Length: 367
Image 1 (cartoon, rainbow, N blue to C red):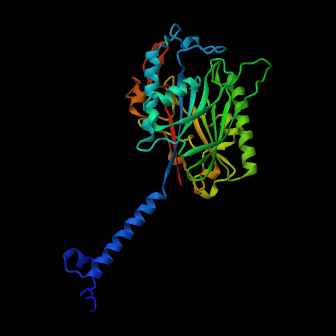
Image 2 (image 1 turned 90 degrees about the vertical axis):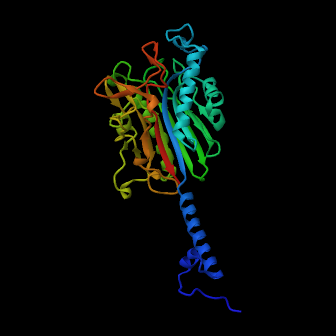
């Protein structure tokens, strides 16, 4: 017995109106399943890998570290840094980092101004971040105040292969020790290799020009590492991020690192070049940087990437994927025509209760 064909050749209509044959129903169901598979396939191709950079402003514990000048951040110190204030700060930092991931945790976080392993252990094990399973690596430099940089990472999406600290030379014998640069080579869940450098360059204490030589030396160290990687592989995927204490147009980034804003046309991107994604960054309302000083926003926190990450390869990003994370709980009114400023942890030595004096940066990669 022959199977009856559709009387008018419109299988979908037959199926929906009830005037159908067995063949019509099967064909329609297969069409629907095929379309669903195409949608799922397209979604799977756009997986996100998120990086966060944040100066968390003096994230000290309440104990004295022998050999470091951290006495201001002790219970009897100038800031009255006690257990309650410490827990409040940890909770705010953790809440912010968790919020920056949304429904999917942030994959890697570059943090500046963390005191030691004890602080990071508390942050990753005794706050709401504990359920997310973060691991970390950090520097152990001879900074007089005892603050360093760290990289928190999700072991399921980023696996460190090699880590190293790079010291920054002094211009005079016995000069003030400078913070080390953290270098982490790691593999993502997509199988791509990332080379990440996290820095906290010397501050502008004493004036920008007077303090600039130290930042130039620190940038020269990072430039040498990046150049070595790119000479070995012109497509190397390099990320340099942290608190530069300089803006993208200053010499440390523009001339020493030779990093410039990416060109509009993808075809003009040089794979062996370095590009600063934060040079033109802005956020609403009227926020054009991550740090506000004397009523002016500064772009002191920056993210620099190699051209190999901007060329729409298997693992890529763009300038538009970089953002200032101006979350409402990190801001407060500035008192000037409806402007805002960052809600700091301290105003002078008065405990103000904010998370940090810097705003975080986010950068999304796709694969």
